Length: 443
Image (tube, rainbow, N blue to C red; front, side, top):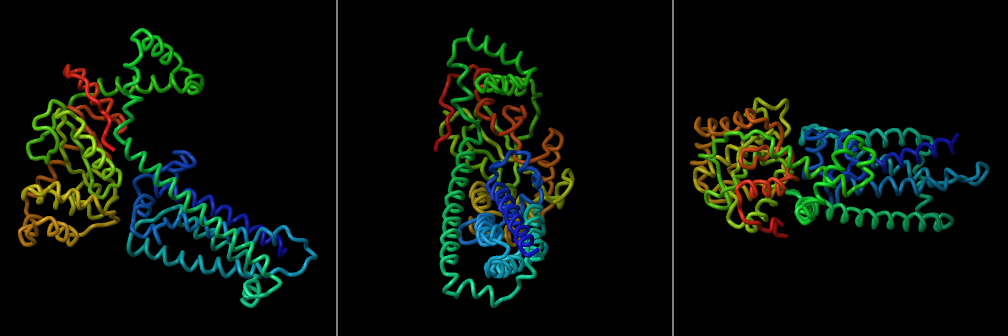
């Protein structure tokens, strides 16, 4: 019976390892186990808010990485006991495991309190790990002797097992740090290519016309038989690129009011890019950085405009729930900063931070840091004209089909995702008969 309990606790630790991997995947937005699994916690809801909060890291590592070390270490502590002979000497390792799990459950309660009272959002995967710890504690309840736990740490006869466990824990820690670094690199790479991958998007033009047409014909035919298409990555890429071109070129041209929107890039450039954004959206932050890096390579032909679409019911009636509480305050601050000619300084300061919620005081603090007068800014935040300008952006966004952020338009045509941005720019270049230019964003 004792060994069964230990085995159950060990299996629960493996479940904890899997959940920690999913949480690490969510933290970086990298689909370690596939997009469907990543989306299981929910997109744009509590999981994203918790994953992007400042409480999601400790000591420079995401809490999910610490979870990997914790569950792996407890499993390493329990595994020898789970496979030990039933008639062998009593083992003190499960007692130490009990107190480690109890400590973990205490931390879980603190983290749950943060989600309830501070972040005010809930992460399903996080709560699942709390249940894993609770069930593990129940499984190990008969081993709750503190003396036996200390015996594993202090007894000379357990020294070899203690050393083996410590070495295993250190190896797990090193693996977690290395894995975190790799995921950080993958996220950075994804951010660098958020506008699309130029060499892939432009590859078809480097192939002879007849060859492209033949391959496109084959790819379109095979698209009706997805198994065959998916088995040929090259043809699939050609098909997807052409489909993206067709979708963009067929998209209706929307009339967007740009008279009061902050702008960057070329003055009256022939290619106009409009981004509907939310200052608390991490993907909008990545897009802002990507556009900033891209513009110097655009040969003075691209003009970008920023428009507000905060995912906050305080000012946006077109969203079902306040995904980013306080985003309306930050957006009003942006309107006021623009009135004073400091929008892009404000924009940079806001996107330099991670947000789980924002307040009026945050706007005043950031406004002051970019040189705005506090009393004038406060009056502007309360002004009907500020609220009216923000409402105008929001209503226009709803009219042209914006439902999430970031959403981009190139010369009035809506993009399905930011990943086809470079492709859309190239299509507009050809439509306007402009000379070719390197579309690779600056590193």
